[in-house]
Amino acid sequence: MPLTGKNILIGITGGIAAYKICELIRMFKRANANVKTVVTRNALEFVTPLTLETLSQEPVYYKQFETEERKPEHIALCSWADVFLIAPASANTIGKIANGLCDNLLTSLACAFQKQIIFAPAMNTGMWNNKAVQKNIETLKSYGAKFVEPESGYLACGTEGQGRLADLNSIYSAVEELLQENNKFLKGKKIVITAGGTKENFDPVRYIGNYSSGKMGAALAQKACEAGADVTLITSASLTRKMSFNTICVNSAKEMFEAVQEEFYNKNADILIMTAAVADYRPENCADLKIKKENTDELTIKLVKNPDILSEMCKIKKPNQQIIGFCAESNDLIKNAKTKIRKKGCDWLVANDISRKDTGFSSDYNEVFVLDKNLNITKIEKDTKENIASKILESIWQKQAK
Ligand code: CTP
Image 1 (tube, rainbow, N blue to C red):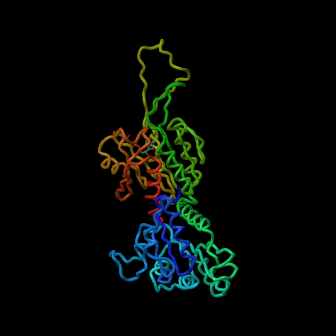
Image 2 (image 1 turned 30 degrees about the horizontal axis):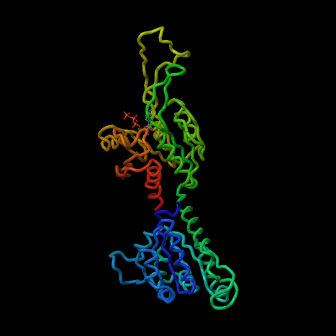
Image 3 (image 1 turned 120 degrees about the horizontal axis):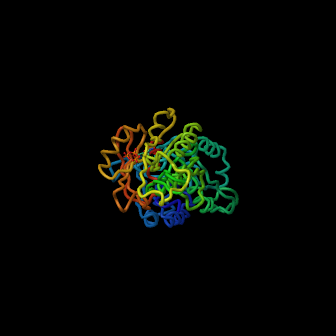
């Protein structure tokens, strides 16, 4: 569910529609979102803190200066919230926020909030049609705010016209859409990902390979796609289902190298992620026909070194291109990873311990360490490969976006 674990801050202003927000809180809570409410003093004329606290299971915030926590509330709540919804948004609060005024906690939060704010206005028709109110709304829209327009109908003040708080489902959908939009932190990026263990043939039907399943690469491709990237997966592992991104199937390291050169370098992609377990060696010769056992009691296969795709790409990459390597180690994980990121020259290296039975190769789970060029290390605790993939992408690119 898209709202699971998301932090929704609802600003409630003084208007009769404030009572409807109680139901909206329940809808968000049912979707496993975390909800906190910040209210104006006038809102408390319509809904009580006890109601809001019981529904949200969080304290209600309205005191601008007296804080229990050390951090100033407007900073703490702003960094906590994934989305800030102001509903009902009164003409008064809209006017104050449009003009940068901060005379209470709610307007101070709106002023400090760095992301898009959603307003769901509710007011009397005359107020809604007032030119100053409309001008304030236009100003906020020009600053990037999102509005869920009020509906027309019977209003609490006894008149009919536009001004009634939008249907709660429309407000809910607007929050959901904005969160999905915010999640597209790789929008506009072209990403090439390699996956699987390469297969190095020594006759037409036999090869030297490894146990890499390609699951980590496929999960990264899926998550990068969901984050808005244009993804190409170059894989030597067979895919069990149809993917929503472009896939190129290869077998050997040589084929993978050619595909990476074409898709990443020649087509000027933004990012290369090398999750593939590329064979370091390949048989020097590949027999044209199947090797028959009658002909020999012993078989010696001479291996020669494969190109190191990651190192080669790091050497020629353009300044706008970023490269993430993976490293599989069975001992001294961090020590070897630090040496490897320096040696290969990539921007990040994701290290995983392949000696563990419960994670890594072939498993559906992984636990990794993400190293940057300065050797800063972020640990991503054991989780499914899908969740690890999301966390790797977020830890690298959402950090950059901030
Ligand atoms: N890699 C590559 N080409 C190779 C070997 C590895 O591009 N011929 C890439 C892998 O895709 C991975 C990174 O290099 O992103 C590290 O791979 P790893 O197997 O951990 O290390 P190796 O370079 O193969 O070194 P070693 O096996 O000696 O640890």
